[in-house]
Image 1 (cartoon, helix red, strand yellow):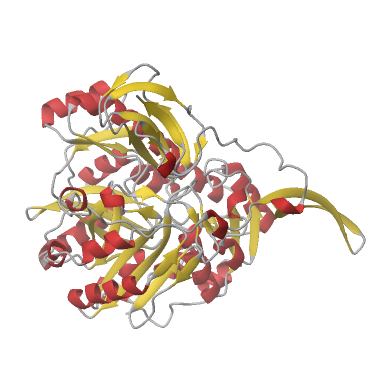
Image 2: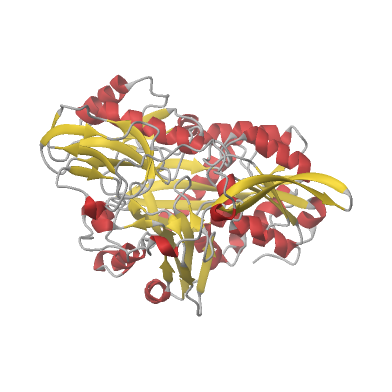
Amino acid sequence: MPNEDFPSSLAANTFSKVLIANRGEIAVRIIRACQELGIGTVAVYSELDRNAQHVRLADEAFALGGQTAAESYLNTEAILDAIEKSGAQAVHPGYGFFSENADFARSITERGVTFVGPPPAAIEVMGDKISARDAAEKVGVTGVPGISKFLAGPDEVSAFGAEHGWPVAIKAAFGGGGRGMKVVNAQGEVADALESAKRESLAYFGRDECYVERYLTKPRHIEIQVLCDNHGNGVYLGSRDCSAQRRHQKLIEEAPAPDVPPATLAAMGEAALKVANGCGYTNAGTVEFLYEDGDFHYLEMNTRLQVEHPVTEMVTGLDLVALQLHVAAGGQLPFDQADVAISGHAIEVRINAEDPAGGAFLPSPGTITKLRLPAGYGVRYDGGYEEGDEISQFYDNLAGKLVCWGADRDTAIARTVRALREFVIEGVKTTIPADLAILEHPDFAAVAHSTKWVEDVLDLSGIEAAATPTEGDEPEPTVRRDVAVEVNGKRFQVAMWVPETALAAAPPGGKRKRRAASSGGAGASGPGDIAAPMQGTILKVMVEVGQEVAAGDTVVVLEAMKMENNLNAERAGTVKEIKVQPGDSVGGGDIVAVIS
């Protein structure tokens, strides 16, 4: 496998500091890899993340300001300023945020700072899913039928559905991971689906362009990890199956992809390398395919490190982040395709702050009041939070990833189930009960599941997470105070965050006031009241006072943890009162509308 030149001192000799332009568990993962290589680390943080785990672990940390992703982690100027102040020689973008943004990568490299990822030109080709389809077809790799241009409006979606049949998928052209993707089952759903896809895409990726393609009804989602250096060498590091999904976002991933003929997996690997080579790709990337009835179709290429990269690491024995830094420093791959060997089987479970809620999967932001991690042979946990940390409604709901290895798939499944039963997390509700339902189902054991299996087949009725603690268990909120201090006779103006009760003055303005007209627990609501099931922000009000609604009609659209949630009328009636408007923040149990 890797020769004695890796891990080498090349990355450490090239980069004295690496700035991580991200947060959460992926920022922690990159910081730890840098520390092992002897590279200094620089964190960036929003106002809400000033005491986050990645900030505590890094050697240096710089404030970006703001609360939401748009105000902080997607603030190009603030991040560029942090690079300049820190003197970092390289930037690792992690995944999400700016990881697939060619303009950001170019702005980094133009300053003489290394972007730990592919060149901007490759991101432009593959980050735009339209040009990515064209690039794949040029090297003989075909995808699912679709329109290779940005959608100008809903009429194009309707025309495509009429020609190719329903359902169709509207997808974010500059996104991935299921964000900004909406499945449309009939012409009447097109306008709302396109509007929602554009909103989600803009919120998560900073771009709202979308395209449309056929939606396969029972495919498996299989992807190939590729790694290419700047010297013309490239390898694929086995396969992953990511078919256990909800809302087109992965819950459980495994490596290698089970129950696929070895010849087919090899053909996917070769196709993935063709796609990578065709766009001049370097560093780590993932080529995704849909696999159905023995055939595979190119889906897209993610020009970044994947959330599920640990399962590949577990079965190959390779540190992908260390390899990314090695390649970014100009190093050659220390092995070739013949050296890549797969050992055993690995399963990754995403521990999301969501209540399975019988299959509704409702976001559950809050403070982690208790955290006890599983351990034992073959068990790994990549987390972004510790006990006492808050998982905010403004960011992704991934708390961490449990990864288990076994000599074979059955062993890996059994070990993962054992570890999940050991896992204790309180203060937020998580997907663990649903994860157990998936892993213990005979369809999963038999590899009889597909990307829609969780939503269409798996019975999650009665599956809910444990209740969150009472309000008295939560830490006291803090407020900012600007203070002048002297250090060795030199005056400094510093910001301090202190408990609200420590100062009589009210907190400074600037935060949106939460509507309190009907706050309180959901249990206090009346039969016609529609309550927010979680903390979030109102995106859209779909009805007017006096309007007649049927049971199941959407009343408001609520965004929480980067996901849109429709709050629907539970009974038919007339809209008597609307208590919110777009932009309002609400808490769990707040009444948003009343149906009489």
